[in-house]
Length: 180
Image (cartoon, rainbow, N blue to C red; front, side):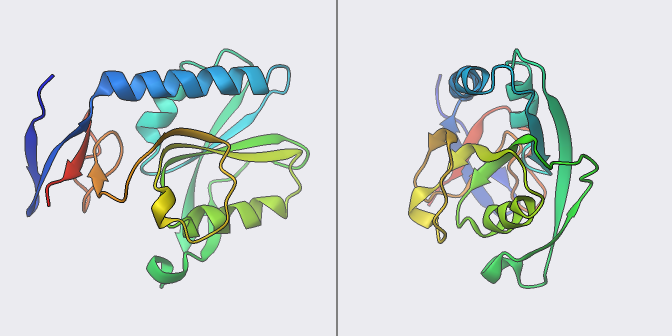
């Protein structure tokens, strides 16, 4: 498949990962989760908005009893610099003594996921892990042990497959990176 270029707002992006490649990474992740959580009935907490495509494709490949719930995070005003999570919106399940796996589309600085994990730990789950489609290890500003990573990528700005640029691009099947 040949790379293609798209324009979103004022930026050009070229194909970075085709859908087939993304799905192969997700299958490997699902295989690992299926093995690790056999007989544990995990609760998957999907962080909206960006994770919706990843969650859909991952959930179809999980072959054990599980629950999937969707949450949003409300942040303090300066989230870009501090990542302080004010509140978890939509968490209706009791996570106490549950095996919880947070599902994220991308972890870059780690501010948001770090804040979310701190709040969830206070609710005393039996276990707490993170599964992310993409991880930018060079951007991390927190010591995070992310057990399930579909793909580590360099510090490129990416869109598609749930990831957006100012609202556009979430619906794209492939992932695109900005053309510098």
